[in-house]
Image 1 (spheres, rainbow, N blue to C red):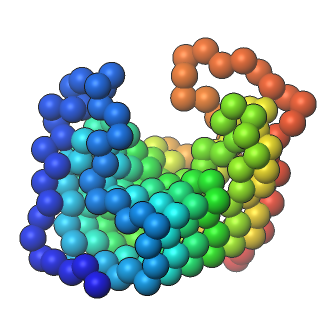
Image 2 (tube, rainbow, N blue to C red; image 1 turned 60 degrees about the horizontal axis):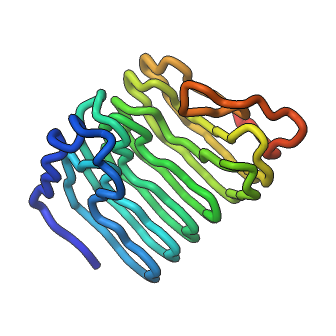
Length: 210
């Protein structure tokens, strides 16, 4: 159990001004761990992503507050990578990047009662960079409010990638000023120049609910 009522201030503004030097400067990282419970924590202005759950299982994060300016670079709220059986609920996330990003090798993810914004929404991916075979499955996102975000519910895959994003459900979602409330991008590129690849792609299976 990790519980607290104070604020962890990453003082990231200096790093944001020097983007080329800001590499792998994360806030709290839970790695190679099991049965972790985080509650009541507050993070602000991390140099990059505020929290990351990597190669971990059975993590429950609740009642978190994560805050950074809307124009701060790469300041994801929570990033998942090779993570399984993750529960994130009752949290307020305001960042300059994804509120929550779900990366390769993650499965059985439950996200509920999240206030997201500003930020880039809740994203699956990006998957398949450099033609890699990458997968995400069994994701359930519900009762989320996106306020003045760039995106809402998003799935993004690189051109030429392989793999899948499957068994993904977004439900009871409210958008208040999101530029792209729902977006599936299979030609994702975060560089100025990307080579088109159309022969292979990541399979994205969408099951809308009403």
